Amino acid sequence: MAALLFMPLGIVCGWVAWPLLWYVIAAVTWCANLHWAYMSTDGMSIDAGLCWGYYGLLGFCILLVQRRWPAQQSQQAHSPQFRLPQHTRRFVLAGTALLIVLATGASALAAPAGKLAVTFLSVGPANQEPQGEAILIRTQDGKTALIDGGMDAVSLSQALDTRLPSWQRSLDMVLLTTPRKDHLAGVQDVVSRFQIGKVVDAGELHPNTGYTLWRRTIAGRGLPYAQAHQGATITLGAQVTLQILWPVSPLHKSSSEEYDNTLVLRLVAPGLHLLLLGTTALSRYALAGLLTTIAPDYLQADVVQVVGETGKSFPAELNAVLQAAHPALLVITPAALSARQRQAHLPSTIALTQQLSDSVTDQVVQTSQTGTLEITSDKHTWDLQQAVNPNV
Image 1 (cartoon, rainbow, N blue to C red):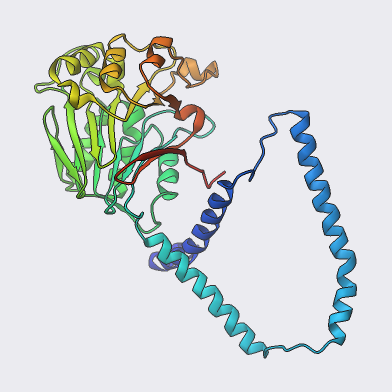
Image 2: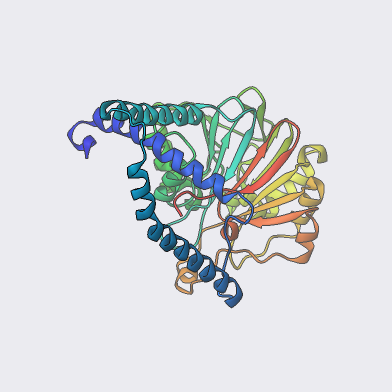
């Protein structure tokens, strides 16, 4: 409402409200990570009985306190108490509130203590299955990069708002791995509204309408642009390097160019090697090319990410790539569902073959099942956690 009158006034109001809201989100997140902080009923009578028993006991305690409260008040009324003057009390309360705001704001502004965070965002249109790929990278030294943006600008904006300060409208880098709509739609909105330090993609032989608009927006806003191919290296901050493993130059001409020419990235940082295959995982040509043109050492990774399509199996070449990478974790992000699949209410979860599961040494997770996932690294080890959604 303030912004409708005067935009800078709305921004100032946002600065005041944001630390308080951040404080609530931080408190909820911390409490949710406590042991036995919550219990899932799943329709089970035993768990539901425990929940009803808990709330019944809580209600009984509240009634007991309320019945005893008048007696305590009357006793306190007859006992001498030291009371501060009203203006002094107001000053103390206002000072305490200001201290909380400053403390939480300072904590929010502080960068993560030497940690790299790679967040696989669960994005998609409202009231639909998660669809599309969007990966947010935040480095130890405060650099930020967005890889793809899913197929819905609204859900991507909400996801970024929960992980970036409200005043941040800039990203150090944006990378587009493929011009498919389920990767491009969200990030198109980002390059329209954010100030971007560098935009990177692999180009396209036969640009579609969405990709043409993408390049026009980049040129119109004067954003630095680079077309990357196999062998290129991109630095993000002082300790993170993105190695471009695919595509080759010139680009491959085929009926599946959006799959065959997908940008494949390998993130190299202290304590974490991450291989982002994306939709290349669905291209026999690209997977075979990786196996023949890339040394096995450059395919090794702690974590591998792929895009999976409902009703479409992965090619056998993916097993060979995973065996060369030998990851401890495989992350699967969902592609867009077709109109017929949405009408049939099919899930975006991907069914895996046993052979594919055996190629991973530890576990397989899908953002369509678990929601947003975050991998953090502290220069020595990496850790996976399911990010708490403060909007839920």
